[in-house]
Amino acid sequence: MKKKIGFLSFGHYQPVVGSRARTAQDALLQSIELAEAAEELGIDGAYVRVHHFARQLASPFPLLAAMGARTKTIELGTAVIDMRYENPLAMAENAAAADLIAGERLQLGMSRGSPETALRGSEAFGYVPAEGETDADLARTHTAIFRAAIAGAGVVHPNPQMSRSTTPLAIEPQSPSLGERIWWGSGTRATAVWAAEQGMNLQSSTLLTEDTGVPFDELQAEQIQLYRDAWKAAGHLRQPRVSISRSVIPITTDLDRRYFGVGARGDAEDQVGYLDGGIARFGKSYTGEPDVIAAQLAADAAVQAADTVLLTVPNQLGVEYNAHLLESIARYVAPAFGWTPANAPVAV
Image 1 (cartoon, rainbow, N blue to C red):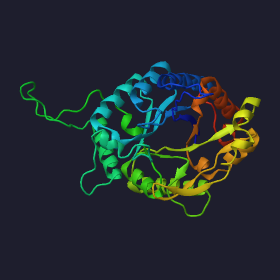
Image 2 (image 1 turned 120 degrees about the vertical axis):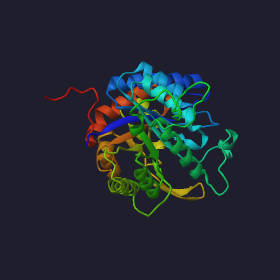
Image 3 (image 1 turned 180 degrees about the vertical axis):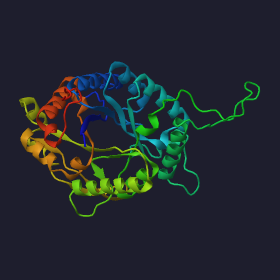
Image 4 (image 1 turned 30 degrees about the vertical axis):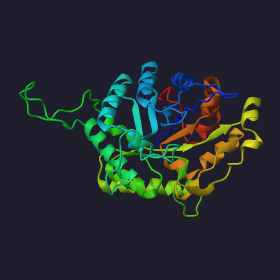
């Protein structure tokens, strides 16, 4: 299995001391610049998180289109879009347009979303679960409509005063292969099985909203295996993709040490706590000497099981620092778990 790595930016911006992303404009433009820098390093993917009612990236498609116009080969993705907030048909148009601009490089992760600062935020956007439905039901309904639309399904009857055809009209534009590049962000083993049954790729982050007492990487590896088993049982013809997220900070310079030295290593072990009313297990961060964390990641069961590892970046430290961080990971860490640069010469 060829391993891929990508960066994942939450796109924080705040006018505070030390922040290089003080405004929304800073966060947006720096995301584009970091995608360009990552592509030059041979990194495989540039991914952004989507949050509403917060000083973070919120509207992904203008950003993805701009990233696509400024790069040539790197995958461009989301991890994840909260589908409770989305108009599925408008999203289908925007996604197809951005994908065509990028030369069909989008990898769109979506989900029910995570706990947020807004109380019933999606309702402010006009989306309220029907009676007897949950937020998860609403997200899945929006996802089903979106996926049908990008697959070319007719969604509205033609106007007989404008057309002699009676064939239902599909959204335009269409991007032919986009349907194979849709991912579901799953926080449990059960939702991973559901994603496989639906024929979506799997994204799993640095937390799972369940706990069985085993280390996080083993629980996540079990989630991945259940997903792959369900995919096979469903009889899908193509091979699925699986991504996981990790926080990885190699300490290679004095600046790294100032930012992420001993005082920042309190999350070097798994954590178990409560999230959204239920128990959750949070994976540890990998911070320290490159050879040490390289060995740790090589032994991480979920890293071995996934084909793509998304590396969360401290985006408020700016493009130059994050490019340095990605270069350190690419040079000293990622080769230990089987990664080679996307721009490496092909052996003949």
